[in-house]
Length: 201
Image (cartoon, rainbow, N blue to C red; front, side, top):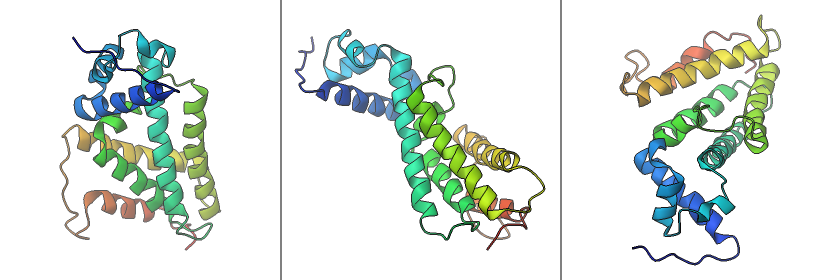
């Protein structure tokens, strides 16, 4: 029998989170349960409830942190450009692609509306920050586009997510574009740019 470990000063919440993330990376979302996390952390099954009331709360916390990671990556990409340039395509595209390919199970969790609380204030805030920033960049770089910024944002996001989902499900394999010789994900971003002639350079 596992001897229950002692945690102090809020350490247990951090430990539970770290263990849950480890299980997510290793076993996928199905492997992240309150019982599994408690067992891996070496505490009783009832101990996590003081920090995460149920599995959905724990998974929501995991998802929120991953969106925060993506947001930081987007910010880093945008910081390399001048305001209003079309670099947003690479900044957002590379942030999503790099994250999804490196952490497939974490990426899949982000879109599990059946498992995470989409009304959680913290989760909503960071999701809105990413989407609003995308829309603002589109508006700055495409003043004369014939569609509203949400249509462009949704088209772009759908392309990124669709390719990632097909890659992670094994339907697509990582090949090079035969004309540009670029990796398919990079070629897709360039392909999207060709349909946006109004982008400021």
